[in-house]
Amino acid sequence: MFKFLKLIIACLLLTLALTAQAELVRVDSLRYWTAPNHTRMVFDVTTPVVHQVFLLKNPSRLVIDFKQAKLSKVLPQPPKNHTLFSRVRSAVRHKVDLRVVVDLKADVTPKSFALSPSKGYGNRLVVDLYNKAISRAGTNKKSTATSNRVTKTVKNNARDIIIAIDAGHGGEDPGAHGPKGTQEKKVVFSIAKKLAGLINKKPGMKAVMVRKGDYYIKLRKRMQIARAAKADLFVSIHADAFKNSKVKGASVFTLSNRGASSEAARWLAKHENSADLVGGVSLTDKGDILATVLMDLSQTATKEASRKVAGKVLKNFKSIGNLHKGHVQKAGFMVLKSPDIPSILVETAFISNPTEERKLKSTRHQSKMAKAIYKGIVNYFNQYAPEGTYIALNASQKHIVSRGETLSGVAHHYGVTMRSIKLVNKLASSQVKVGQVLEIPRG
Ligand SMILES: [Zn+2]
Image (cartoon, rainbow, N blue to C red; front, side, top):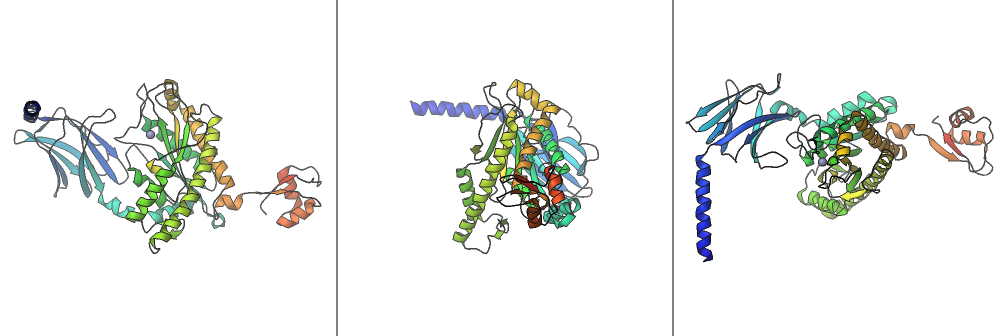
């Protein structure tokens, strides 16, 4: 009996499949997402489509052949002055196939794949075009990061503290969305840009935007960009969503232990980025056990730093409104898995909550959120500035007066004048008391 049923179902499925095949796949639209070194073309298709992508020379063209497909409307042209292409054309071939031809302005390497339906999108065909010239130049990122640094702080050879700011999602990945349709990728990018602005105004600090526009970057690549920029901190900015629209508030996350240890194992097993430095020690020439120990040490320090920054950011969020949870939370987010860069993820608010969606869209609130994150970061680095940084060199010291000490003695001890101590501490006289905390200016 069961066999019979199965047979009927199989027949039905086959019929359905045949009917579907007879119908042409519809190509409904095309989107362009332009990143610094590549452009992503996304075609909306009614069902997964058999296709072929290849290049033609003289003149340079990219051809995308869709089998058994038709266009439902005219494809949009690429943005004016696009670096990679000038024009997109289409034609019907063999009566039932579709050919799309892209006129190219630069040498590209194409890569294509299908995307299944998600986040409001249906079936898609993605064609990524990597700009060969820029990809080649991009291999030398380290020198760029160094030269950027030199231009900002030349004083006393002290380096800037680098903050990598990662605006979540981007391009074809909109992230979560609010009841009014606000997209997470857009609001978090605005907050990230405001945060970068604040950081770049602060002497001794420099922001690096991980994504610089509306395009998607793979999660591991986001960590690589932070490492290439020699970031001292990685901050990923998001907006949460939940099925209950009443849920609200900001949360700050660090990496959970489980996420950390499995990632360390992965690193060692695959020797990914084996040439990279972990806590200043190259892993390539160390035995596996030593490498594990070094990785652990580096991770312990990183985790401790992440926890402290997260705590400071959370505290500053508390002062501007709702917190979702009153303590730093832990999760296995991929982007937090750099073993050597302290990393935090901030869920600025719940975009699924109507009030918070409105706040996320408001420029004033975006500034407030950026400022809360900024203050947390500055609080942390004022206390724990890495050695050799401008902020470490310019940080003032504190001195607690003990029995028998005089102001002139303290001044002598630190090699500064009494006058400067009095000035900084707003002291009217030279009298000091036991237990008094004095700020000692740099000489
Ligand atoms: Zn997100």
